[in-house]
Each structure stands twice: as C-alpha cells, then as structure tokens.
Length: 404
Image (cartoon, rainbow, N blue to C red):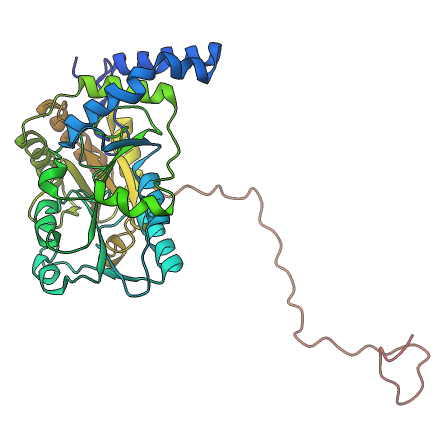
C-alpha cells in the first residue's frame, strides 16, 4: 500500500499542511509519550540522551548539508525565526529585505524587529512573471542591508525561489541571510553550503512526515557570534517524544530524485488546468509539488469538502497567510494540494476525477424556505405625525406634557 493512500482509497495531498506519519514514526511517538506519562520527563530525557543530543543532529546535518554541531531543535520554524529576530542587534540605519511571498507569522516577527530597532523594512519587487527581481537586488544591495529573508517555497503557492542565486548576490556584503525552508525540506534538495545562508529554518511535520510541534534550524557561526553578546538564541526545546519521532522519520526519509516532485507537481497542475472554471495560482518559472488554485464560482471551502467526500485530502489557504502577495491578486481563499515523493501517478488521476466531479455539481441550491401555514392580516399604517391629544383639565395656553 502506498504511504500516501490508506486502505479505503483515500489520497493524501496535503503534505504541505501536515504529512502523514508512517506506522513506525507513530509507534515511536506513542511509545515514548507513554513512557514519559509513566516515569516523567527527566527519565525520558535520560533514556533518549543519545537521540536528543547526537543522533538527530547528525541526521539533520546530513539532510541540510550542514556542518556537524550547527543545528538546533525548536518547536517550529516560525518560532526559531522569531527567536533570532528578537535578539538581532540592528539599528535605525539598517535595512531589512523581505519578499511578497513572506508568511504572516514571519512578517509579524519582522514588524516586531522594526518596532524594536527602528530599522527600515523593504520588500523586494517581483518580475512580471512572478520571480524575484534579482537584478534589482544586485543593484540595491549595500552594507546597510543587514538582513535578507526569503522563503525557499512559500505556503500559498508552489514557486521555488532562487535561494542559491540570492546567496551569491549577498555573499560579498555584511548582510545576514535567512531562508525559510518549511515547505521545501523533504520535497526538494536543501544544502545550506550551496545556498550560503546564515539561518535556515524548517518544520518536521510537513514533507518530512514527523510529528507536530517539533522543528529545527541551521545557524551559521557568524549568526551565533552576532547573537552571543545579546543572550544567544532563546529557543524553547520541543517535547522529547516528538524529537524521538522526528528522528525516526529522518531515519526513514530517503532523498527523492530531484525531478520526482516536479513530475508529480506538473501532473497535478495539468489536472487543475484541464478542469473547467479553475485558475492556477502559480507565479514564477520554477514550481514545486505545491499547487494552488481557485474556481471562478465555487468557494475554496466547498471544493475542499467535496474532494474530501470523494476521498481526496487537500487544504484551503487564505490570502492573509501571505498578505503581501495573494490579496493583491484579488484572492481571498484558494485550494492547496501538495504531493509528496511517496505519492503515485494514480493518486493524481484520482484527484483529477474527484475535482471534475466536485466542479460539475456547481453551486449548491438555495435552501428552500417553507411557506407559512396562514397569512397574517395586513396592519393599518400608523400616521407619521401622531395627532395632538388634549390634556384633561388643562387651562388655555398649556401644552400637553408640560407637567403632570
């Protein structure tokens, strides 16, 4: 049985939201959660000492192309990013670059950085095709640019940003370079040495198919030196059982050939394009295994529910998840489907059939309002100006209501 389909024929196309844990990973999570419940967290940490402090970091280093000892664990990519920015020593003369594809969570951390340090926050423009304008970056980079933040793949669409090209532009300058790989790691190759970044963050529960609430970050020595005088990196450690489960997921993770997600993703995009009334949201020239679309009449929530009724699991994304991009395109909500390297071509065929059927239903019929059993008698209209009533016992010249 395919890892992305269950015995009842359900197809999982939401690895970008929450990857399906394998039986072995789920068993590891359950086992160690029960162990902690029985013996307590200190005993759990003692039993998992080798996993927590050596094994998982060796596997993360291999996954990210990072030197041994430069990875840390956290509760999620957004938490790690916010923690770094909370200690970053910038000032009013510093410029910070972000992109229109930045997530709402990371923008919140960037706004907090701007408030704390009074730095300037600038948005890198896009080319007409939706790609980052690398020429603009090369022309405007300077030593006053202290931080550049780029998502490898954003949450709301499938574009693959040229993170290695950005790294080469920034390399001669003082700028720190942060890459959010939450929606890339596990479906695309990630190599921090080739990217040239100082911070790379990721979640364990998406394409890596680990448990929720455990993530990781690569931190280059240069970043550690910048944070050290200001208290270092204030990260909340994840739950020990979740770390053990992510370690099990990393042990099972086999890097797929680079074309695999693109091949499945192209099939997924073709299925959407061949469905009447749908519109892809796919800026840029390079695409990943994430496919976002909307229908000209049907709300995204309705399409998602109808696909679920037909055994296909997708997700609904909202514009405010990437507030600098989707609202400008007039998008309020959209459907997001995402393939994992373990998905099969048959899964895409099932999705295509289900989507055609879901769209063919059209808009739901308006609810029928029952007719009343009787007709209420017509009410007599009340004059707009009520007549003045005489007050009994009033003397000449007194107005009604002047007294009692």
